[in-house]
Length: 212
Image (cartoon, rainbow, N blue to C red; front, side, top):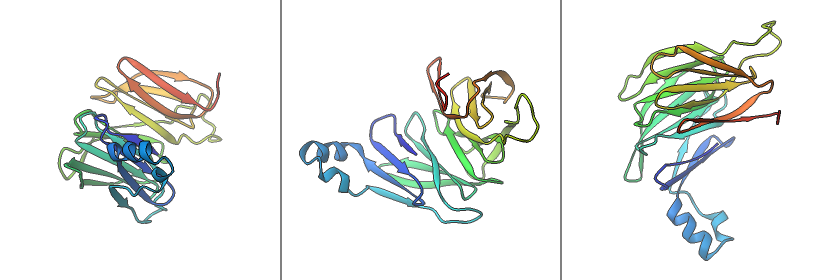
């Protein structure tokens, strides 16, 4: 997973090494311009380490809030972590324990709420303005047209805007719900696993496996 802060200050990269490396983009660009080969060996400004618990601590999702004040990480170890970002410091605010692998996280613009999706087939919004966090709504991704149990409905991606939340994954269906209440608004059957969603203003960008 790779994400950048909207102010262009930070670049975060996480993966199967159970850590998230955070780079100062200005420093990264300076090194890349002066010594392109040296950029590949540049050390991160900050490294966040995660440990295996209920599962391996593979990192599948990272997210910055639009105001740059908050950073979130979703891991296979059943946890989602929320951090305050201030003057280069990433200080953990909330550690959320889920019932299965966390595949997707998305923060509200001000970092006060987080949406989490994963292997359990549910999407949950939490208030994380301060600890302890509490759930605001929960919806299921179990919307297969033929629900015969042959296709699990893992949630691989979530996107959160000011008015609505979108999510999808192995169900082949993009669901859109009200961001405040979780009430269902619409669904789109794409006929393919969806790997990524993003909300850009009034547009929803979708990356399915199929080019259909």
